[in-house]
Amino acid sequence: MADITEKQLKTLKKLIESAETNLAGAKELLTSLIGSDETVSITEAKAGVPQSGKVIEGAFDGQHMIGPDGKNYPVPANYASKSKLVQGDQLKLIIGDDGTFIYKQIGPVERKKLIGTLNLKDGAYFVEARGQEYHVLFASVTYFKAQPGDQVTMVIPDEGEAEWAAIEAVIG
Image (cartoon, rainbow, N blue to C red; front, side, top):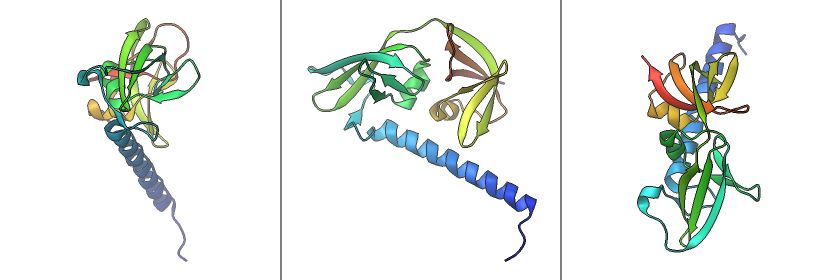
């Protein structure tokens, strides 16, 4: 067996990170298209409100809505990205009798904007701003066509500590 060089190890690490990023993106896209294992379909409010179904209110945690029972409900990444949802935003989920999920933002929290640098680490995207790292959704990165190293404007809750941020724009 040939000796492994440092260059080969670095190349292998980069290939693995790229594969992890692509896999995470594929999983998010699949979830936004067909829903999670718990759902038949996930639909945005554009599709209309079901005539009957279950209504659940909860808080957005950066990826999911957490219901009053502590259960996680999948929020489509494209909806969260386009709506620029931030941690703490209050959502209403209507689950139609046919399994349709419709989310509506009912209580946005106060927000503040920061400028930071987009980074990729261990297959996940985050923005570093003011010495802190904030996770961002892969769907936001692809929606804005952002690349690691880009400066971005992001939105976080005005109060409290946040682990997640919403990308608002890529700065030229």
